[in-house]
Length: 220
Image 1 (cartoon, one colour):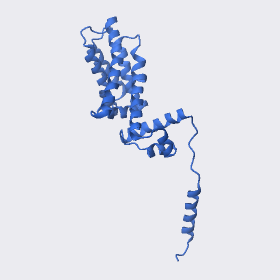
Image 2 (tube, rainbow, N blue to C red):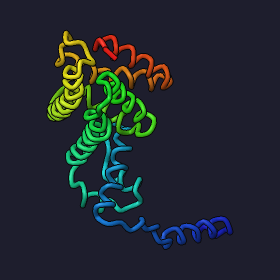
Image 3 (cartoon, one colour):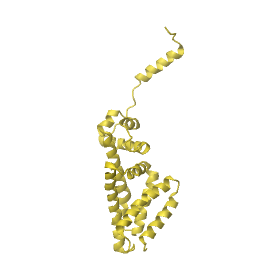
Image 4 (cartoon, helix red, strand yellow):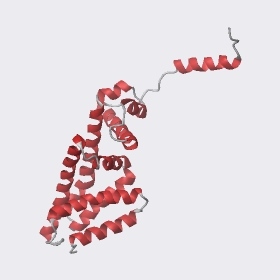
């Protein structure tokens, strides 16, 4: 029989304490608040690991809840992906494009405001932008179909701005509005690459302003 030393006795005592130590409970929340909390954790994990690479156990560890709690809100991995891209779409359309699409400013200025709001989101909400970047190049299957729906919504928001510019004469009537919308939405990728590669906000603003004013034939 092995001799019990003070070191092994202490180790055994610590192990027993660890087993009996109660798990720290997560802060109590309403179902709506808990779901929103778990969604933020899920979004962060997808940004770090990739779409479809988040597991229920990852989200549970992030939020400090049990794994069954996560399953209660998001029963499958497929549903976790769906809610993440739905939230990214909501954020970009409602919080980035929406507030500026009905402005009364010069149309070119409104477009710059949209693109710079996206630029600021890279610093303020990086998880959203990182997930969007991956989603935007997933050119197959259901993910791509969902992205195209988001893309069309973004185009519609920008088109409202450009049509206003045609009506008030602030942009050149020779501009092809449908193509211009695609160029403007596509500029988000340029902005993301510049910012993640180290360009500062002033450099991006100068680039965006020059691109928009030149392309739209701004008539301030």
